[in-house]
Image (cartoon, rainbow, N blue to C red; front, side):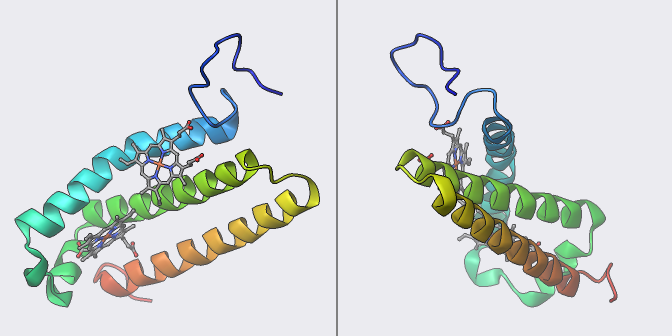
Amino acid sequence: MSTRGSDAVARSAFERGSLRWVLQRATAVFLIGTLAFHFYLLHFVNHAADITLAGTTARMGELGYLLTMVAFLFAATVHGVNGVYNALVNAGLSGTRARVVKWGLIVASIALLVQGLRVAAAMSPLINL
Ligand code: HEM
Ligand code: HEM
């Protein structure tokens, strides 16, 4: 059911007020900050040629930085996958095919998160598995 009201112009491709709509906006706001920080740090503070494994390990050894990267990983994954699913639904995907795609995307997200966490753990001297 659409809750867009009587506005002639749809302001969102998501169903307003739904959980997926809230998630897309909350992660978008978070990504504005984290993407800006990420590019600033890894392009301008440390120039591309100066990004080394030793530098990454040092950054990931700071708890606040590590937690920020993990939160960034979760936000980017949720935002990207939720956005792709929404675009497909808007393109007409429905019924069983939508359910198959949904679970395929959920499995892909879990794989991405698990691998991202493994990389974060491998890079951080704070985590010795
Ligand atoms: C040219 C652009 C980019 C460069 C050079 C870059 C570089 C890096 C580097 C070197 C790290 C390791 C952490 C560190 O050394 O501080 C990292 C981590 C990370 N980057 Fe980027 N990045 C770029 C773009 C992006 C974009 C566009 C996203 C998301 C949409 C992203 C998401 C992440 C995440 C989530 C991590 C943490 C990974 C983990 O926890 O396993 N990066 N990036
Ligand atoms: C500063 C960073 C970002 C902001 C502020 C942002 C903002 C948004 C917002 C507000 C929407 C919902 C639009 C609507 O209601 O119709 C959206 C949709 C979307 N976003 Fe982002 N986004 C950002 C980064 C990203 C990144 C890094 C990705 C990819 C990993 C991405 C992929 C998508 C996709 C696929 C959609 C769905 C588009 C559609 O429904 O056709 N976004 N974004």
